[in-house]
Image (cartoon, rainbow over all chains, first blue to last red; front, side, top):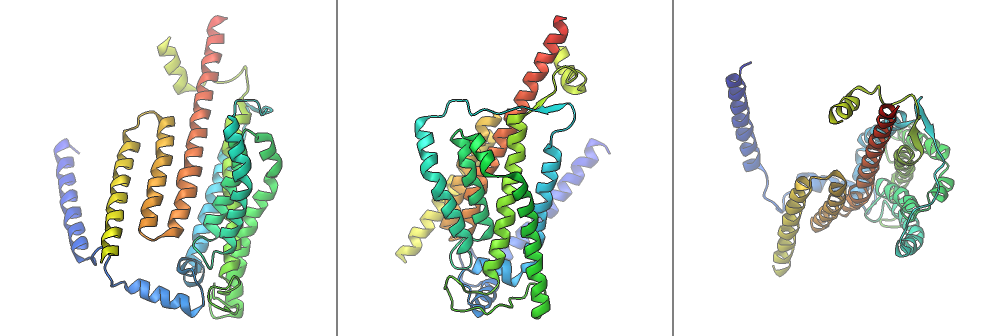
Length: 262
Length: 97
């Protein structure tokens, strides 16, 4: 392919893309308009199952199988990252001390915010069917809240507070729970991920059937996933070092750079 | 009517802020500074989502975009600089022999 042909292909592509996009944009409803077919269908479906939070209802009630796929993607990604970042041969793990400068104001803020963030995370998971939030958001808030300890310079306390094995199992358990709830919907109700539990009163704490249970399952998976993910990165950065002696000179690319620099 | 104008102004302001923030992220050259700018940009996006009345998305954004992703980026940059330092030390030792 010469430069000329490539340019022609590029121009044709840009023109076709521009034509398609302008067609699509002129056919779209206006920004902030009043006609939303999808919204009307989703909101009436939500109220039919007495769920106050429309987003939670869509995620866990109306399209539970899609959410199961998304959760599995997250699970597989974290397993992959953990496998990539584990210590290999020619690497050793060193002890990490809490030495290092942490401002007193940072330490104080961490002590104030740590319990608040944990309570907020649990609250967001528990009220996922009623108020904005849900399993995903609450799980991420929980896991970032635990990592405030690292910001406050208490890495050893962080390691004691999150026994990693628990969270590795919690991650898998959440996915299994999600799938089991879906199969229970098929066994007791009409279809996979059907909302089989009585839905109760709209906007009550315990309402909307299976949605809170799904929230808890997703919260478990997401919280554990993010903790395992950040633990792998923290371990690589703080604890894992290349073995002294037999390393690095053989690494071809950086070795070449160093050689040419000196 | 007045309410509509106010929310339109809010949307325009937050969209402009997001545009400026995105440019700032792209134009920051140093990766570790970029992580901090990215975190601030995540906050701007959160404001945008709140202005669009999407609190669920805003919650996800504030947790993932301003906390987890910048932390992962900073940790990775630190690890890379550690590997480089170790490597330099090893080559220096070898040349010193």
